[in-house]
Each structure stands twice: as structure tokens, then as C-alpha cells.
Image (tube, rainbow, N blue to C red; front, side, top):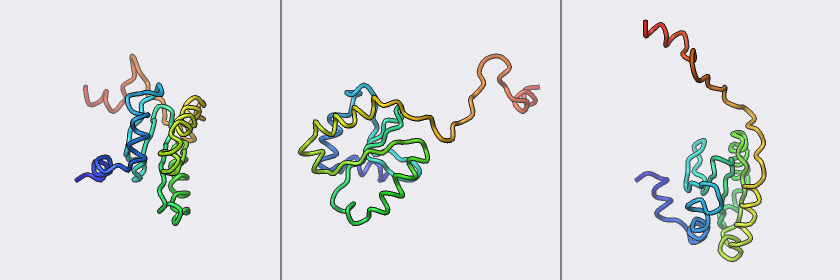
Length: 134
């Protein structure tokens, strides 16, 4: 079975609780859950606002360096990472949602390595494409 699908089907209580508040654009932005970025599967991501939300259980306290590398790798894509403990998501759900909503309102900084703009309209074909047509 696909790892992302496995994680979605076997979500923790904290993930289920938070997903019930993030799904269906309830905060005005679309979130995806268990989405793959740079080989990492993040808990929740709003691609439009470049915001990643991670829920951490007790095992994350043992490997802080891994989480830091992961956050830095995601930041290299221009993503902001918010981390919460599972206990926070379960016991302080409204506070977690408020923090996520505040981050969504924040205008994301420009991407550090923006993609080149695609030309549109007349004359947008490249020379290679034109030579193939001829």
C-alpha cells in the first residue's frame, strides 16, 4: 500500500481532530493531508499559502536534529513550518487553529528561488516547438 494512503488510513487522534477543522477549506484555504514534499510526507500543507503544519508525538523529542533538517529542507522550498505537539492539538484545538489561521493571514515571503515565468499568448512557442511543426 502507498505510504501516504497508509498514514491517512491510520491517522492519530490528534491528526483526525485537526483534519476535521482544516478540511473543506474551513479556514478559507485548501489543505492537503499526508502530502509528499522533497521525499518527506508532511501532516498537513496549504500549498497556496506555502504553510506546512506538523503534529509531533513523543518520539519527536528524541530526534530533534531530524526534525530541524526536515524543516530546513522544506524552508528551502519557501514553505513555513508550524509544529505542534499532539497534546496541543487534542487539548487546545481552538488555540492551534487560531495559530494556523494567523499564519494563513500572514503574507508568505517570496520564494527564494522563483520559477521562470511562462510566456503565454501569441509567439509563446519555443523555437524547438516551431521547428517540429514545420
